[in-house]
Length: 418
Ligand SMILES: Cc1cc2nc3c(=O)[nH]c(=O)nc-3n(C[C@H](O)[C@H](O)[C@H](O)COP(=O)(O)OP(=O)(O)OC[C@H]3O[C@@H](n4cnc5c(N)ncnc54)[C@H](O)[C@@H]3O)c2cc1C
Image 1 (tube, rainbow, N blue to C red):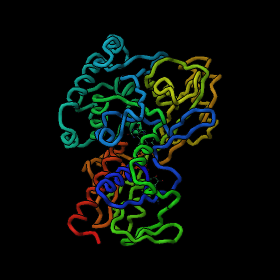
Image 2 (image 1 turned 135 degrees about the vertical axis):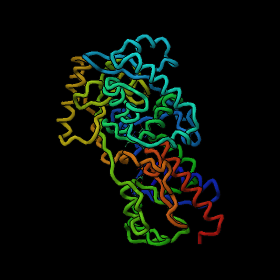
Image 3 (image 1 turned 90 degrees about the vertical axis):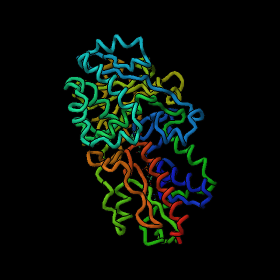
Image 4 (image 1 turned 45 degrees about the vertical axis):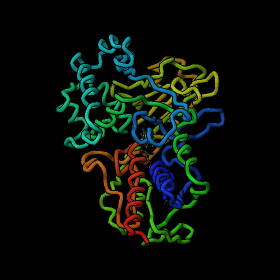
């Protein structure tokens, strides 16, 4: 059950192996957390700011990037600090921006050389080896393992990784940091022309017709029976629970859900429309000051023009957590901060929507990735996948779905499914 990325990846693998699959999905769409809302004025608003990292092994395996018509981010960022933006670029992809990067007051020269060294050293080993290194927090790894200064940690890593981990204490597993840094070193961040939901939609198109049953909420798992909210029961040889962690823990309660991490992280995205973009950059802008609600901002339509109607711009501002203030108050605070960044033109921007995602990511403090691959098989006939089983990401969700499908197929081959 669950037509998020994990459930779709699992269903793809099983149906390609010739099994009949039914996905029971509580809502009316595929994608789960990866959804896109089409605003009546022609803007594409994702369910919170999120990106595809093109180096993800699972998306490379499962998605047709050409068909997604990806718009790519600049490989680097603009860091807001001391009243100005400072460029931090990947020198291998943007060599002409290397001098600006070296001059930026975002850390010492040694820090910048360490970024290059980390990028080089994290690219070399096999992915599996990255996950074998001792697990600590990202902050401890940055400081103690890589030797970064407080300056670059506070001005660059907190907002940059904070936007990915959805927390800026950097308490997230160092294994997640190594994985994410490797993905940025090997590929780029990108957005599909149809919004992020184009990814699950493409996966769903690869499934036999009528595989996904929408508006079908599962109430309980009872042995080999899936009990629906409607009261009906479906008896099946194998059940895969592909929901968010808290719902998985509830459904698996009777089946020892002990290792399902149910704590989570939230995020809020405020979308604005503008008559013209405040910058032509397709770069992520990071708040390197530690003050104000905005962690990152980006002109999405500079990255992917399809996100805004012709002649207009779409700007997103990301806030960590779910601030306990009204949408109007939050929008006002965000606008004040962006006015400071981009000038008085911000007053003329139209607020389109504030998107609050309460359950955005599972909590990923150590020992979240010990082991890095949590078991997906509960017993013959019952399996569990989702981003809480691997790295909490698009890649982790897809990988867990494939692993669950392989466990089903192995039990079937061994004659363990009735
Ligand atoms: C705002 C935001 C930003 C993010 N940014 C990034 C990013 O930049 N890069 C990245 O890699 N990842 C990012 N992520 C994480 C990524 O989106 C998730 O890790 C991934 O989508 C999780 O997929 P999933 O299939 O495990 O779970 P979900 O997408 O949560 O899917 C679970 C599905 O189960 C269904 N369901 C739940 N309960 C029931 C029930 N009882 N019966 C039937 N159906 C049920 C739900 O409706 C849903 O469709 C972000 C997430 C958010 C929210």
